[in-house]
Image (tube, rainbow, N blue to C red):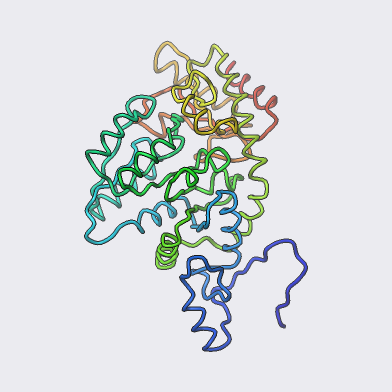
Length: 389
């Protein structure tokens, strides 16, 4: 049976491992144009190289990010590996500079892969307290002259908002490639490429997919040479998203802007409610004027919102009392707010800080909330009941 186009509004799921190239001439043309960075293939070759369903989702993501291109991987960590690997060149010995307040998986990748296995000269810009010191950062750039600078727009779990535009400006003046992990902020709040970043990455698993049932990552940029290197590395390492997952992602992206606005709205409501509660000692949310980086958040995000994450600390006379209140709260809300080690879902989920981050954040009563898109009033009633237990 010959495949014919049908009048569908959706991209078909192409599960082909390899594609029919029909004759030697077409095969030669397909392989010649394989790495053309701005070329949507006329003829696909093999799904580990590129796949039409995956390319369709990548085009949607590029539109969301405002980038020239986007390349999907099977996880956020695969995106991190891909983008960090293409900037490694034999004989290049300039150090790389990473902010210390970044995802724990990224920090583990730095220690276990970049340093231990690949021998890179890695430096860390250690955040002083609860905000990034730009004077200290500029001084470190002058001392280190890094080849690569890597930071996150909003840190996890303390929600430190970076002065992203200034970081990019200073790093580019120093001759560095700038990579931004924009997972927490999403393109709704900030588009780093428009402010001069070279590459932006996301754990698509989080807000872009947003339903807690799809694992993916993406690398976005404008430079065609970067894209060519990334396609080649992804092909050789097999960091390709499946067409089935790409098709589901394409559906999820249709509601991204609606979802993220509701996440931000609900998180603001929750943060303000928690800040009024006597059972809560401290609330970290960039939208609150009490947050140490509220000014940076307003500068970077404008009036678009402040994200969907809220971190708060239980009140208590001592650490043991705080842990007890934390555990009672988690148990009391568990029927509605489960303890799940991810974020960005449509439903609110939580994660206790001390059991997960350990000595890095020894805060026994602290909880990270990934605020969902439920009716805000219902969510606040659940939180109140949990705090009153």
